[in-house]
Image 1 (cartoon, rainbow, N blue to C red):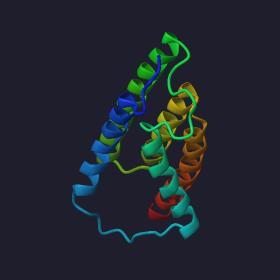
Image 2: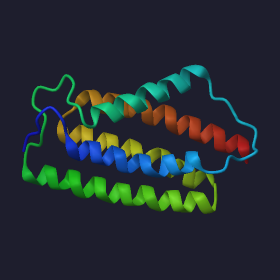
Image 3: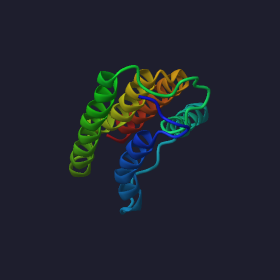
Image 4: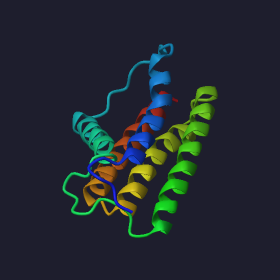
Length: 149
């Protein structure tokens, strides 16, 4: 199975991942002092995040954009579906209790979605940016929540 120049499944996954983030950002702000991560780490996180968002649906520098088999496509759909369900569940848990374990799950699950998608699509640039995003996002999440507690 091959895609044209846009992966609508990837775009849908990205949109579904953004919904709880938008709801959280629109909600009431907490009075806790904002802990700043080092600028280089924040820059790595943002470059990784936006690159993954774009590469999930746009096949930049990919010769053949698609799956090697029907089984890979099913793993892609089911795997990302399960990860999205877990992501939504951990947002619910996090809204009730802002713990380090819930925050880390919310950092790891999007990374897993980007990695799974990149590997199954053989989109190696997406895999590279997923690793960059995951390492920096998890580090920032850990440091931020450790200092707040």
